[in-house]
Length: 172
Image (cartoon, rainbow, N blue to C red; front, side, top):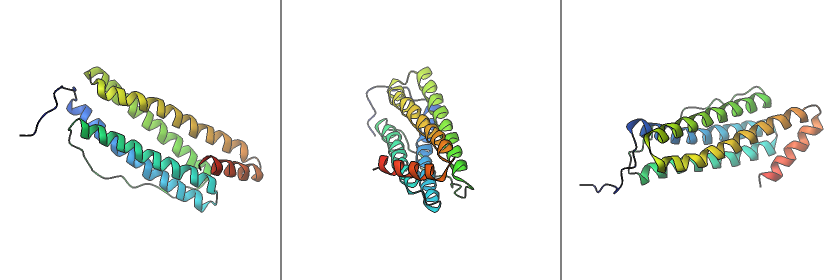
């Protein structure tokens, strides 16, 4: 017989599924940002590529945080796989717009899971999700600022070159 935890952490089947889904969403984010990085390499903006390569690694760590939580709670982990990523964007602007949309989707998901955990009294899950809520605010702000900077920089080619160099330096 497998020993059980001494405390009921109030993880409903719905919350268990949501945590597994979010883990996969974080791994998908990592995969997406690798594709974004590759596309920026194709556009020959290496600073952008480096920035998103760093983001891909961070997103993978986020997936690992959900994996660790599921494991600590002795819940079954679902490794269903990562969906394919579209990586044939027609412009830098299109890439950045998709990234913004993706971060907003992730933020919404985190908030929904937090509400589910909170309503079910799963405090240990709420604690982790509060960290993610702050993290998502930083990530959304970061990509929106990047998009705004891109919009300003594209008024002249030199501006884009300078911006790319700054991103490269910040990503080291």
